[in-house]
Image 1 (cartoon, rainbow, N blue to C red):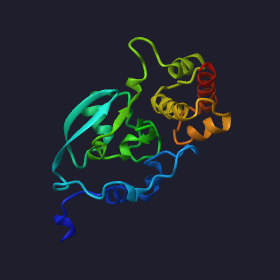
Image 2: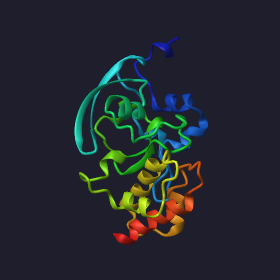
Image 3: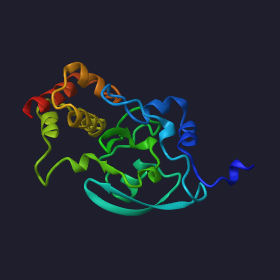
Length: 204
């Protein structure tokens, strides 16, 4: 009874709620990043679980101050409040990687992050890669190497590849394959997606 009257929603409770299999997917392991520590995140957010909180964050370099529900995910915030639908909603369980974005340099599943956890953070989505009409080199490489097939997983694949290149400008093929391992491609186009990331790295 006491827990129902608690003042906040914890990261641990949320991750338990979406299933143990999703915990490891909340932050995608690329082999270059440290394993996330659940206890390193704030344990509670002020206010009732079904309440709202105001947060400040940057998305694609633009500052926002928004009111979000405590149960709202980052994916819902990006798609429904900001209209950034390039972040796809696939499994909604932290398994497929189609909603991958970059938060403070890390590629994560947006469906496995609560919006209230984004206070003070910087988020990069697929819409933030291009500069005006000029595509990011990685986006161009995906086009040149026929990376997209149906296209549904493409934005997530690109964001995982981008996070890798931000940390390691000259990855090996094995490192690229590991970096993309958290992104499922239903078309099985992995070889072309890996080739695209390697080509973008070479161009740099």
